[in-house]
Length: 186
Image 1 (cartoon, rainbow, N blue to C red):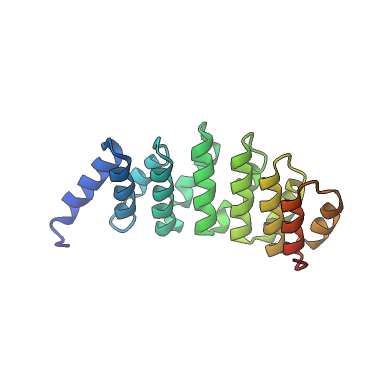
Image 2 (image 1 turned 120 degrees about the vertical axis):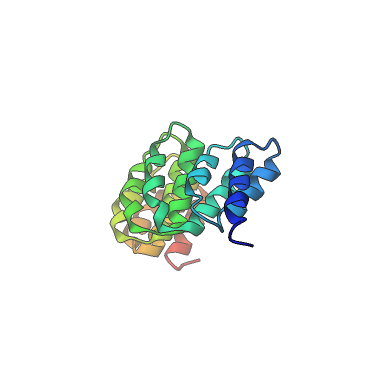
């Protein structure tokens, strides 16, 4: 693309992301903004889009930007909208920056089960042993997907003792399978 047209094209994408009625246009704008310019601000705004696929595409574009957006994403783990917290956790896990470990650990106690699940999954993706104790506690979460994500994360960071302790009392078959897989007993 011609360099003198890039700012106008980027501005058009930002406008489409923020105001197009068609979710497909907003989703494609997110996708394209992930590859050009400094688009973090509009993409972070798109995490509030009413369309789930637009939010997901904005998250993928933010993950592609990487470490420079971590400081903007961490505060979103406390956003009033659980969907924003969920996507922030997802993107932080995809980026894999250790600066997000502490905030993600705090998100393991979020009121919304989806956020607890995604925070455990993100911590597993980051793989920092500092999360071991918090993930061990998450093995007792009331939500089976959160327990499963915690089990898989512990398998990646060396939480064998917690996994072995949780296995006998785990009521969910899918979580028991995840624990066995994490222990290499699959």
